[in-house]
Image (cartoon, rainbow, N blue to C red; front, side, top):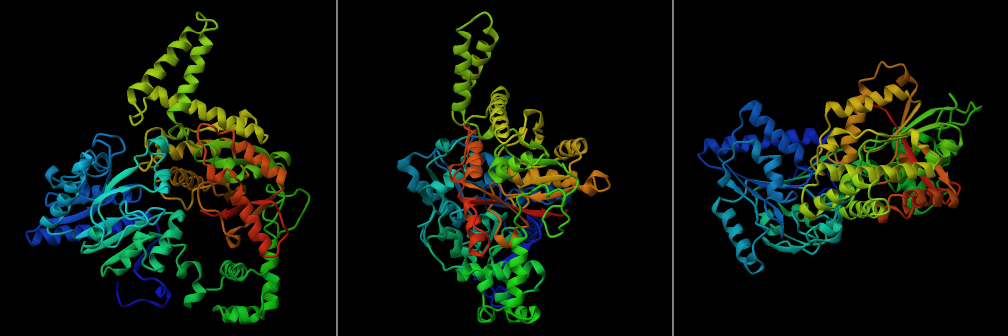
Length: 626
């Protein structure tokens, strides 16, 4: 890494560049690639690029395509080597990395087919060793990789170098970690369909590249990125081995950088601004680290942790403790829609108008209940008009077994009255035939996707009804980006924003609840948020918007930390149980690790540790400004 680092980067062991957005990072990296290609062309040599798959590099590939089409960037003299491939998949398989690269890059640029190299997932088992050795040799014969592009998995892997991969490992067949397979489950329409093995470049192979850039987007990557950048080099996090490479860099968006010390704990590197939010963050961090309520912190603890200036500004620890304790306590309210008849400005939500029209956007069915099921019920009980808006059908998360079960029920029903149910019997038979024809990995035909959508709709209505929301106030937008796309390849368009905007204009809400602001921009939640943000911004002059507040909640993303929370809705044991029962209405697909309520219990535990009242669980929200 570079020997010149700023004080704020003192904890970082590899050069890390933070961009405002993933798109900005992708554009910067694409410009670097253009320079490499042009320099190699001038020297009469081929540029050799190492490429990655998954949702992370998609914005980068789209920028390369734009440069090719609009700026004349040619790939005629470029050779590529991909990191990995699932073992057992043909190159035509919808989830093979060969097909991914063709669809996302190669079919849209002028790279010669013979210059494209990927491992072959169909090599017989007894030929895998020789195939991997030959892949290593092809890289060497090409002169080595000039620039290797990487992503990072939740286990910290680069390529498919799962925990335990050695620094010197070479291209080989590897078993996939269960977490990795879970992350790929949506792509394969069920974890049971995800291959258990892959062929991957080894860590040693990767580190031989002359330059390396690892990209990461979204808050869910923040923790593992921080471990790779600031932790020790360890086989438990293969990305940490980039620390020992002289020309390695991490390119992050702001969300993925949030775990770095300079972002998370800036006072420890001497760059704190001591704004009200940063002051609250620092005091909450100190209390949680020392396992003490806020009101029991003493001056020495502040001074020993880089907060002497803050202490001086506040006039002492006693005054600071009371200020932050009161600020944290005022986030707690049992009235998410505002308490009517009160004029207390310190409450998170204004008391009037009452009742309010509240719109809860759910990127995929279940996000709403998972993130704020207790709050939805509370809003309904307090007299507000609550609309739940499912932005996508969620059909891609429904496995074939659920559709098969539904079709068989139709067939059995038709046996009761064959003449009356003849059409239903033909429909069911067609579905069963389509499932058999496509197999576990084929592209689902439209009829099958429509059936899965209907299954998910029924579950969504049942879950909403259990929280008091009638079917007439449950909406399904079926945004085109999802209906026409696949996981890791979604992209918001004008039609998506138009549908969101039309619904907002019709309902004219006083409150909006949304999630996905810090998600991977290519995820369902990230793309849905992009569509919402565009629709919102386009209505800047709408009268209803001036009276509407937007609250962010967490669905699949990491839960808010106490210092980030601006509205905390407590739940009793009975209220939490009712929320979890609503989540169980989703039988076609669920996330076991999110169905226990532990996330909400953990938020309540942290509030208790800070010295607040003790609750069974808390749902957390943060105000959003465009």
